[in-house]
Structures are given as structure tokens and as C-alpha cells.
Length: 327
Image (cartoon, rainbow, N blue to C red; front, side, top):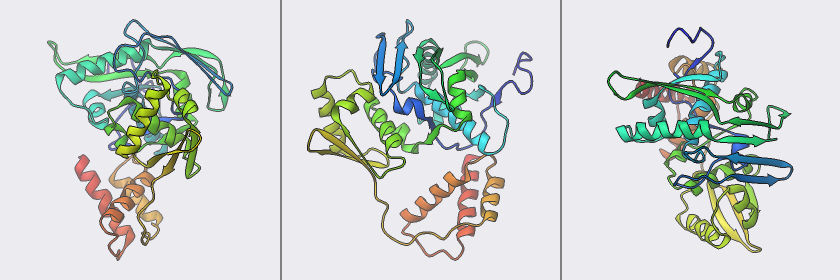
């Protein structure tokens, strides 16, 4: 990095396989447009005492797909915090790593779209009284405060990107006001599917079932579709049944029910020792070992739940294979 960034003023995104994390506030409330075309509306949202006004730039509102950048940054910061590393709200990342982590192409056009996303994130202005980090402060800010792209000489592809998150978002990360997302979130291409998954993840976090009226779900989603069109899209999602982690169903009274998917019946893998967690951390520095454990247990279950002579050895082998794959 250039000398203008003294040591400690920026954080390098270098955590392999960081677990996807999203901030609670933007999961709960509609801050991003679901439109796939430039959206230059001024959005106003009020619900249970929370007030939000979102003002676009000339390039339009930040989209739900632009949010991938923030999820990547939050994920990297949380992995570092869990590892006891120092962080900063100015992050330096490799554009290629961001594209791969969020399941995007790495073509030249993908890099161009990434630049457009940074411009929309920086240009979209939000005024809100949403509480983050235990504080309710009415303020106006951009989703990112600044960004900078370093390219190869003579118009080559971008090498690295420097991003400064808003103080509001960084405060949410420091207070750990975040939730883990399924890695399959980035495979959802339809904007409404992503938004509905976010809401299900937020509201089913502490309860196995969440029931909500179509009207409230429409409001919380931020969709600009008429009610009848919105309901039709929900029915299509129910029919396809490919939302990660949750099933959706209609209920009498114009209600929608979200329920956590059932885990296949069978024996559970034995608990792990502290030594196994320490070994995994040594193999993959900065990793979230508990999320890694969840991945391992899911892998073991889908493999037919074979008998384990040593759960510690099986988990360590899984971590070693993950580290080799990411090397």
C-alpha cells in the first residue's frame, strides 16, 4: 500500500474461507433496492419506531447484489476479531478474492460491474435512527465512506481495492451485531430470494418457526411489486423450495410460515476437544473454528454418518483438506 496508509490505519482481508456474515440492521430493514435496473427513487420506511430514508446517487440506489461487498468485508472483519487481530474500518482486499467468495465471474465485465457497485454503495445516502452497537443515533451516511482501486499499468484489471466502511456499519461489526449466512446465499440470483432469505435468517434465528402476514413481509422486503405480484413470487419460491436453510409455506389468514429445515435423523458426531479446535486454528489461521465444525458435521452427515474412531482426528483431517484446497 502507498505510504499515506500508516501501519494500523487499514486492515488487510487475508482470511481464507471466511464464514459469510451479515449485519442485523440491514437484514431486518430494507436498505437496498431489489431492482435490477437503475433505481432512482427516494425510499421511505417506517416500522415499529424505526425510520429510514434512502436517497440514491445519479447511478441509482445500491442493490441487494452490491451488498455482497459489505458481506465480504464484514465476514473478513469478524474472522479477524474472532482470531484476536486488530481491525480497521478501512480494508484492503483483492478484487479476485471478493468475486470468488461471492460466487461471481472473474471476467473483465465482472470487474467493471464491481466498480459500478462501489460507486452505488458510496453514493447511496441513508438517514436513520436504527440502533447499532447498543446506541440509537439519528444520522446520515453512505454505506461506504470511500473506495480506491489500484490497477495494473496500461488499463489492466484491478489488483486491489481499498474500502472505508461507514462508522455506523463498523460499529455494528465491533459490537458483533451480525449473523452467519449460508454459503448458498451467493447462489441465489433473484433479488427477492436473497431478501426473503435474509428476513428468514434474522427472524428464525431464535425460534424454529416464524409466521408473518403477506402485508408485513412485503413492507419489510422493500419490494416495489404490487401485493398480488409479490404473493405470486412467494408462491413460486414455495414451489421451487430451494431457499437455503428454510422452507416456506402459505397458511390461512394470508400468512407465510418460515421453518428451519429438519436435519436428517441419525446419531450425532461426538463432541470435539479443545486440542482439536487449536489444531484447526493452526492449520487455518484466522478461521472461525465453530463454523468449520458445523461444515464438518454437515459433511459427515451427508456422507452417511460413518462410524468415527476419533472425532478429533476426523475433524483435523477435514481442516487439513480445507487448508490444502485454499492454499
